[in-house]
Length: 153
Image (cartoon, rainbow, N blue to C red; front, side, top):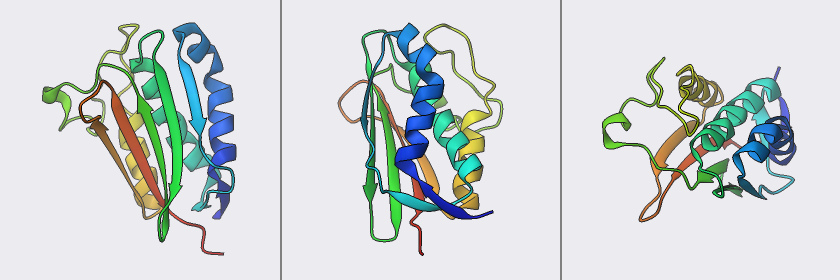
């Protein structure tokens, strides 16, 4: 069912559940997600979409790297951005990262299932939003942005 979902609370849950990997990877998490940024949707699905994006960032960020989480409110939507300092997406993979079962090896050389980003895109579409993943301009790493329509209560 559709409910009001607080992205700050979702992000806190996601970070808590990934804490072992974050600590093991020696990664700094800079969480600037504002409490009170709310969207309307299915909390379970949105939480899993955010989890997938942060998990990707953790997998591709080298030790000593950082992941910055921010949220911003547009006119009718809320944008969640997850920015890492990893190697970035190689050119050959750029068009394919949303393909089902396509995956790149992470820092520990293991590959994901390749279901993360297609799932995130499905969730975004279901909620009338969208997801974008692109290399950072002029710097290392990738930024994933998840845009979801704001809560219209």
